[in-house]
Length: 254
Image 1: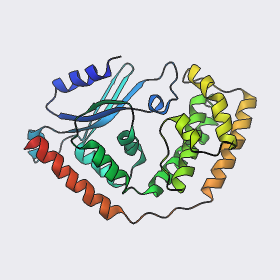
Image 2: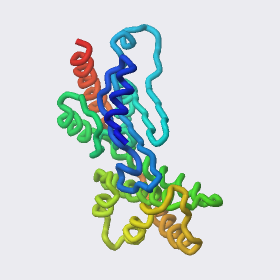
Image 3: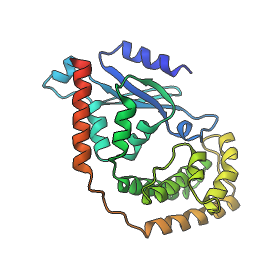
Image 4: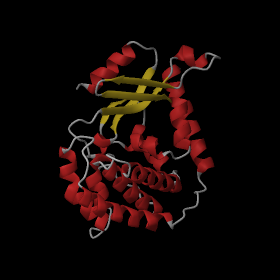
């Protein structure tokens, strides 16, 4: 699939200004199955006419066409989420699979952003992600490799965020940040290649379910017993994003 061409064609039919698009989800994390979609995410500037219009306009673009799953936030929505240290959009910013990047001084902006984030937002997000996955997987026919690995990734990422260490996006790099004797890491490393060869809805055997659920619950209990206060950086982050938002709008709108 030619993702770059798909994005180009999409914006040829619109007056919005595309800024930044990456691959997200399982392909970004190195956990894709043979039937995984292409989850393209990013942000745009609305057209100049729309930006200056007093009427409110939709703040996102959503396209689902076969394996092409595309979501784009407008700049204000994207920066509003970054101001909350939203882990999902922070993953977009950190992604190593880029399809389009028209943002001036991108590397400098990203570095400054990551120096100002609140790690407690990452900790609670990834822990909640794992806990929700663990609940869902225990429903009949839902104990899939996909859900198990999403929960593992969430727990390991929460553990790192608790230490104010940025969790790697690529699952093998994430493993490298964790104690090599950690039972959850050992299990995941042993099963990763099996997972990548399975379809999205492939279910673990009953024995495998029992084994991994015990490990997931142990790690979840360890992490849930911790707490992490919010960092006192929100005002600094707001100011940083406001300044850069103005810079982008002046650059593209004149």
